[in-house]
Length: 80
Image (cartoon, rainbow, N blue to C red; front, side, top):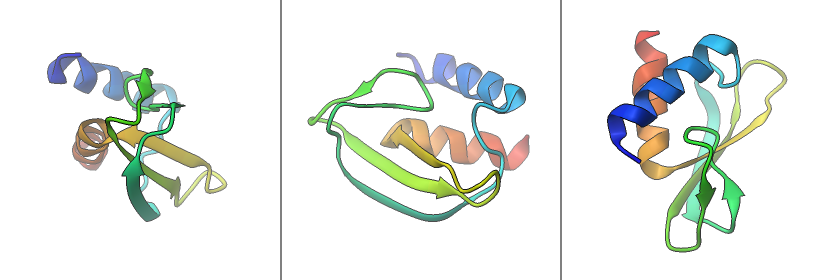
């Protein structure tokens, strides 16, 4: 997926509340294991790096992203 398309999707998900605006308390990374990316909505395969954490607000719900999607989310949420 094109990074600009991912950026637009993440902006929409932030606006709708599907993604948190606040920072994560703790974030960790590792190989994907078939989980769904909260940023782009596609599967994070074992060949991709997954970033996982818990939102600092909204009950601390878990979030997970491909590494590039995490970087885009972190950038977009800071200016939103």
